Image (cartoon, rainbow, N blue to C red; front, side, top):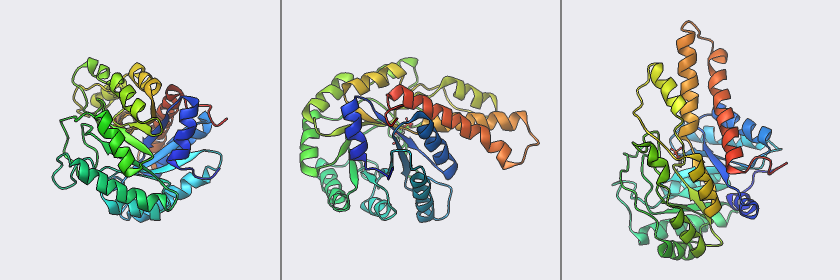
Length: 320
Ligand code: 13P
């Protein structure tokens, strides 16, 4: 199966009433975990990378290798997606490296971090759409401001500016984006909500209103991690110091899917279970230095978590 576009993956999700997980990967090992989970779960998958978030000296090299790895899984329906492109040039570079989908996040000014004007957001998003659609690549835009830290350059955004449904309709009409990231109560990163009720903050009614204005556009939920408490406890028991924090619970994510969410972004949960497994292994085996021994349990933990999310989002079994 060749790489598919975001529009193709989300059209199938809309027809089937499920959501496709978009998993952030920082290196080739993590991409392997996500792709293995997709193959074993018979699930479509969105493999996504944020510009600047990888350990390699040459980002073009990383993106080329990532694409080769994704393509080698010829039995998996996969989208290769740029997450949170903040500049026009990020998106163009990703398309040149063979990404089948890009996000242009022009909802905030890249220099000041302040919410950008509607007009600026439309203009930049529209220019990326023109370039991408001419090359058969899908585009995700963002309207409203999702909380938390999104890119390596970001500070943490405290304020969530909720997406306005009428403005969302104008935005899609003016830009022709394929998918829209909506600000409906979630927040990026491992520090989300300070009380366990944080998971109740997703505004399902708002998702339904936006969806009714935009029947042909696929809605994207960012900041969807649940922040598994056992992973946080393991990290902290083995030298870490993460603050108490809670993410979205499973019921809220599934209500979001029922209300029209078709792409669910998740990075933090994968990174938490990966780090927990790594810290635990190093603490238990302090003299271990062989990478093959050290990396196996973090990768297995990430693969298992990813497969669990695919079942929860209803995408498992969809490419059987
Ligand atoms: P989390 O930090 O909640 O995993 O969200 C990731 C995300 O939305 C990336 O775009």
